[in-house]
Length: 110
Length: 112
Image (cartoon, rainbow over all chains, first blue to last red; front, side):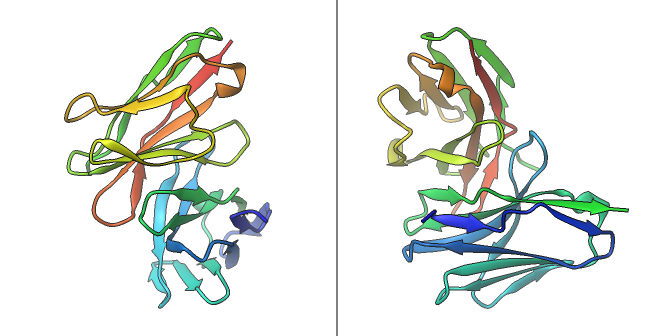
């Protein structure tokens, strides 16, 4: 089983749509969780941290369920500029080893 | 806004040659990382570095790889004898007291 698994994608949505990405992780020693976005041939950019209480940043909402070892990202009112690959990232206790999911590709169309 | 920088942006080398990839982390950060991403594949953790020593490394980070912080600003990744399969994008990242890592723009390594 992969350490971090994401929806395979790609997701093709119209502007204004709401889209949800899921991610599961296998190691219960995982401590910190993040969503990054990556544009083609660019570096990953931090989108948001993920907390058990859930957190929201504008159109983006992230949620963590430690019992189910599941992380989600919800994007509301999708924009063309949201088109990218979304990476689920898990950091093990100690803060050193970092595992990336394979990413989910999102295409937002006009 | 402070950022991580990397040089060179693109490095072409012959198989068997040594390469050094350079990174300047964000100035007040204390934790440093190297990752690689083979074209079309996921980002893979190579190594983390804290307090002038390696804190964690992956199976990929074998004896051909080494890291160093030669002065107060640079953080380098050395590959001693490059192989064709080392061709990839190499990202450096740094973080402060929380776990939020910030990535540099990457160095594209091409081994011929």
